[in-house]
Length: 310
Image (cartoon, rainbow, N blue to C red):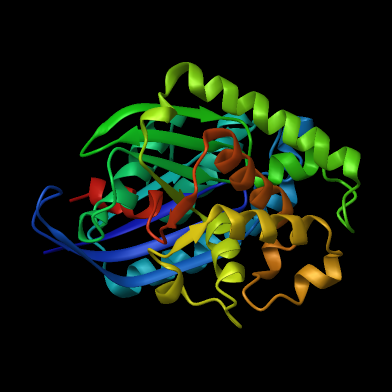
């Protein structure tokens, strides 16, 4: 058995998984020791400035210092730090890299969209065989800066990463989030639809039989649709949410004030400002690609990173 630590640093959040892996990637088991998430908004303003803001870097490093202490406490043997959309896009990503090396003693990997898609697919689909959903799957990972689309059955067959994410769409379009105006919502929807058309060029989405949704925007929408009073990963994981439910939740979120969104029991405070955009991305995916339901997974790229250390 090997104890590993996986860190996923995205545009909106930084997450940690410390896990014990028994066996190999093809036939092994992964058991959680610690799973943590902090919303740090690393991608604050990157779409506009092309740079990581000093205050965003410090928020991220503060969260990472806490994670480093946990990794040392649990004596993880292998550590991998992965950074995604915001860091890929930033001119000053060297500042991020040097800070991570100082904290963890390893160089963070600023991975490509294709690698991000592959890791998300691995993390999301290992357990799906128990549910026996129809294959192939279209795995959709809605992040803060980008969204990854991966088609496959046992392995990845096609993948595409596009620059639509809950933070990016909020900063670009839904600036008046109290609530956003109809014109802003229409602008965001048009931007999303254009990206979905790009995805069709390289991913045969019409071949997919099951849509699998990952990450905080999707799990939050699921929690709201399920009527949960507080966030419960065990109840959300592997649930099936219909398109009608997604449409209703999205409409309500986009027409709610910030104060009203903050009162939703399953809502993490760090998602209040960006959940409308995240829900809209999921809603447009289901409308444009004709999916009647989405299987929601709490396991995603973070689990894929851990499996990569097996």
